[in-house]
Length: 104
Length: 399
Image 1 (tube, rainbow over the protein chains, first blue to last red):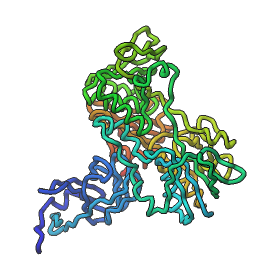
Image 2 (cartoon, each protein chain N blue to C red):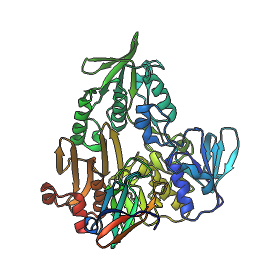
Image 3 (cartoon, one colour):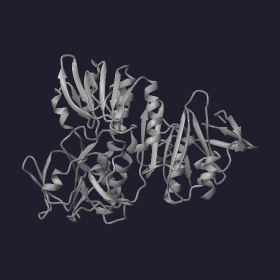
Image 4 (cartoon, rainbow over the protein chains, first blue to last red):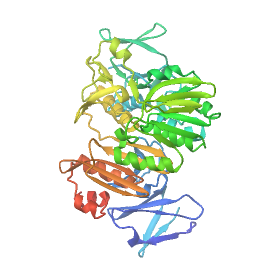
């Protein structure tokens, strides 16, 4: 494995339907959400304005920004609703033995 | 249908174009505007771009007109021909259209006394040109009088104060922003303004205004006189209905449309700030960017034959000093529950047992939850709220 996996949290820290923001050394903060068991990681900062998507509202596999109600698809990062028009970066994470790791 | 003409390249006009394409319309779309700067992100005019004096960013998503197959034409539309289904341009040319959408927006309201102030003493804040002129004046100004403590006036006051300039706000109501956020929130935000040194003169109207050697003077109806370098009139808007009136469309403080955005002439539609549309309390006009886009989008879809009645719950926000204030739904009358601390504020309005509206400061998650509950007409558990349970938890529990 060329990338170093960084342990972010215990699996129990992100229950179903919840999101959390994580600071990762040397890069912008990421937000991780759990939807139907699966984890999704995206950049925490909304591409439209200064807002933390981890504090947003989960609706299916979409996250709604808490400030201006733009929405992103958690699987693809695609903007789904005005005023967001730029995609948000999607990240690779894995969940193993009760821990969540960031891969890049 | 071969050609749709959209008059007004603002967020509503862009919404119409996107709605048309979303519904599968593949004919031509022309977006007409006489203002090269029409496609600016208007919320920034009284926020970030006024604080730092930088040009406002473009409307989100306005950069891909080519990909959308939309032609922008820098031209003034001077008339509509209701019988001949055409748009007439100021250069004398005639453009045939199968449908037209009037997204002409609104102008700043200019009270009579404003004309007594010279061109260097009076300002409004509505367009990119207004913001540029005001930004230049602020480079010299030491004291600014803002007349009208509505949402735009208070945002401008905060932005100008953050540049280190003295600000006096003169407002007729007992609290600022009563229409946008209700009285209790207005009082809360007034305290934040005072903390930063903004002077607020409430329950005061302007009787007269004059140019004086060192700036301008405003005579107030309580006998006071406010002297400043410049005055900004932030007293609301007047919808631009001239084209509609001349074409014989039904208007009444806005262009009257049905739930699909159709005017009294079936091939002509209207969307955004200028449209007076049916809502639960009767016909209304809404002026916020979310409405502009969503209404335009819905009207675009209607024009393309995918009609669904527009029934969006209104959401809007304001940034002032460290506060982000958000509103959702209907906030008429008195809130049934208010939760207030030094650095937080939440107010809830009900329609019977159902949650009807919410105003919140720095609580984005609560607004998202509120919108779902208002959509579902969910009853509000006021006892749980009083115990400190969040709307987010209540909305999840009932989902």
